Length: 308
Image (cartoon, rainbow, N blue to C red; front, top):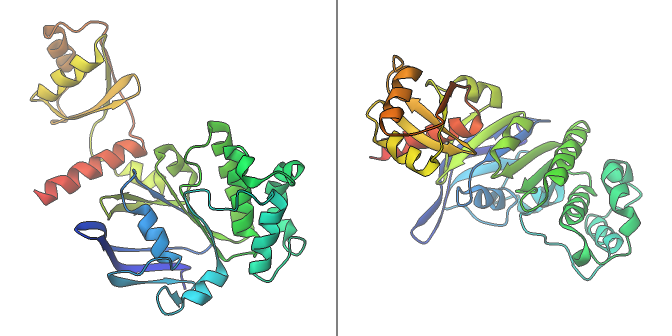
């Protein structure tokens, strides 16, 4: 039995389709990442799975329990960390944790070993009101509260949004330690670089799952040659490359543009010659390997072409 099974799950808000017949499964003991931009449908999916919303159609099971009929059993067995900080800001760190332990008929001491690595980082501030913690400390407290009853599945909806890079790195290290204790983790994020930290990922856009696989396999399946291009005038470079009949796609990535040629025979000197005729200077072009974001953009293009 898979800890999470989703079958043709759909949800709309008025005329807006938030989820469109989504189907997937999460394996026991893995970190499964749902990767996609804001508005992709990630939070709606999470709220359906933790029984806070009802689907329009389709079904979902968590730990073998139906998300509609068995909502009470699911709520006792999972941990949920929503995207927004949802603890009590006027209660202290320790009071928040004690409150959540009491709700689940347990105590901090009973499951302290599960949260010890995380809690010891915020324990010096245990008397401080939760609302006065830094972003990274709030994140650690919320994770402790989601874990204190030793859930079988942990749902984390964009847990690293709005925190600094160091806190993000620390958070993923904590997730690996939690996974080692046998807890299945389902996490969503808008950060493509976090995909490589998951065992498997689902790339999501517009209420649809575009692809599900290991990060390595998704990258391996990238079907095009990929070039990184740079010149002295980035904005003009984008326009000129998009007008070139030999180029398929053009996307900015930091200081470079990532482009896919229409033909595998299109070589670098040919593109450089085209740009020099357009009076570009300091041109740099190199062949590169795709990353998860390149794969996501390519899948989005394919999805848009299917719609049209």
